Length: 381
Ligand code: NAD
Image (cartoon, rainbow, N blue to C red):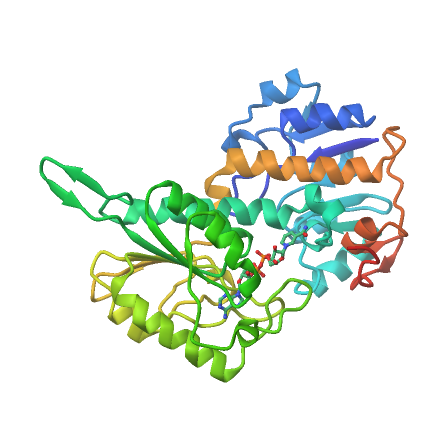
């Protein structure tokens, strides 16, 4: 069978779901590969590189959807892409079926199977397909680079002939995948880094990366935001007050604040409030990685950079992985290739859509004319 990737049509999206290297691996699984012309150009992969890797190049998105039995893409499909789907075809992409019910129904109506990369269960066996983590890692890294780009000073302290420069102080709020990547990047650039999370179990990880975990004056068991399956849940009002009081204390001293706090299925919690922003030094930078879900900081404007009256820059971009399209395409294409590898145990170029398999079942939103979302919880950890 044939697997193919179109050029992404979402404005500003530079990633691509298949790279020349992943195409070679897909061919080893028995698949023929096809790509729309220019699909990889913005990520640094030319048509010539794909051709060299044995990939067929077609001229239009419509031709790509026609040629491919399996369409692998990055963004959820747009209406015109949905219309191109056909019975028996498989679409693999980020899909967010919980938020995109109409889209899911439309894809199902076309008779297509939808594998949502955002629904891959977060169990050990599936880590190699965990595209959310791959992208969060890049977003965390890039958030620090973006902060540095807007911060007029060094991260690391220096003693120079022209004077002594203090190290920057960075606070990372939320130490999940993106937060940990941000911590690693900030400490490696030489900043003094602090991190906070409602899940105290991450303190050890934070400290092992050279940052200081911010504990609250709370009983330890109460620091836990009643985590469910490794994720945070909504904090109690008392806990939230203690957290905000701590942030208020830290705000005047922090040069850079990176917020990444999310609670599954909810708007981002507001944690960095106006009075904290008002108390920050001019030239300080906030990068709000939760901007797409409403933002952790007051004053975050999605997809924009704003500068407050007191000179604090707030970055609300939501396209950090796309800003590093070569890296993110490489990792995402590898996640897709691993998904295909699980779908093709015989390496015979034909997917075996095993609905008894926790990972495949978990990620499948529609199959054989049925909506299969939401999936049952995975049986294994
Ligand atoms: P996420 O993006 O949903 O949330 C980011 C972080 O925000 C989380 O660490 C969360 O605890 C924190 N947060 C929520 N409310 C907060 C608040 N009020 N204040 C401060 N922090 C707050 O999380 P994620 O990065 O997707 O990962 C969440 C969990 O899933 C982690 O335990 C991670 O290790 C785990 N995980 C497991 C796997 C796997 O086993 N394959 C893969 C990825 C992630």
